Length: 178
Image (cartoon, rainbow, N blue to C red; front, side, top):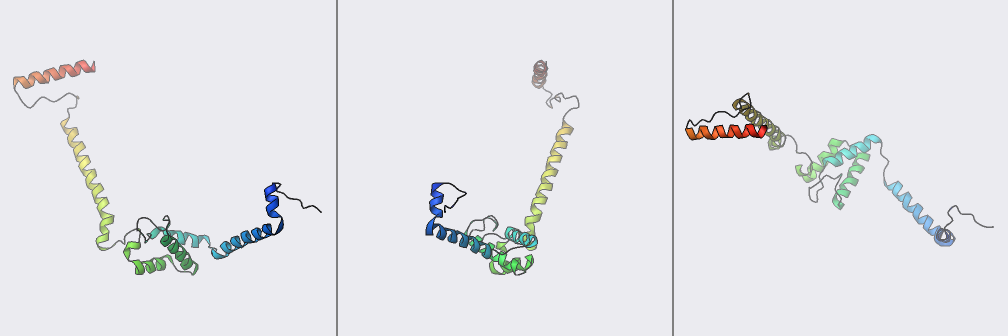
């Protein structure tokens, strides 16, 4: 009796035949089963909680990016720990407090809004308001000094030389616009 294969490649047929194919199949099935058993199954709410916590914690190896995006063994360990804590039913605040106790405020991606840390929230807003006020006053001042007809204002110097240069400039501008 001949065995029929869906995959007809000679290499696939050779691997599937005999003990090597059976051993390879068992190894692949075991690896897939161990991955399935190792990863806890989360509800959508638990998955969202884990992701929110991972985005709020900095990677402790360099404090350069969040645990959610950093690729290091320390970030991997924290991600795994967060998922275990979420699976145990801990709240987002409890998990963050645990990491605050262990690492201090430096572990948080956003500083806690109290004391000196309030500057991180207020200084950008105040700087934006001040910059807007300065720009608006500059624009208004420029608008007030410009004549309504678009011509250059008379020179403040009443000397004959200044009037001659002003007249020459007006003539050149008129010739340029024509």
